[in-house]
Image (cartoon, rainbow, N blue to C red; front, side, top):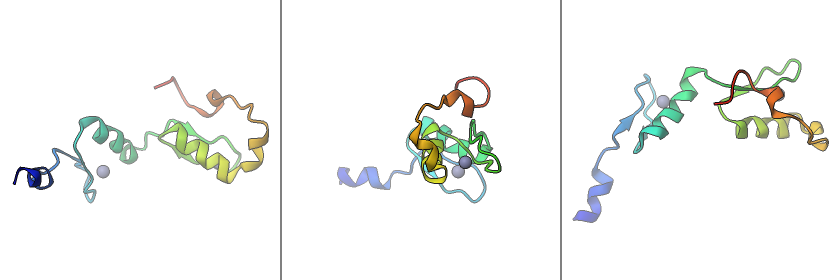
Length: 88
Ligand SMILES: [Zn+2]
Ligand SMILES: [Zn+2]
């Protein structure tokens, strides 16, 4: 029955935010997940009237590709323009 052991064993790192049941088997995954609760969104869209912000550059890129696609043509954007503060 050793094969079943893994499935039964609870994951050790559980998000403590109320109403959130996310569980992780690694602490760094939990840390990353916590960002979604903590409003730490260092990647912010600078488009006028947009105001979207994201926890990761990938998410911001995806947002820009979908919401502001016309800017994709130049592709000469410096990402520093989109980021608050220092690099993480
Ligand atoms: Zn959570
Ligand atoms: Zn935007």
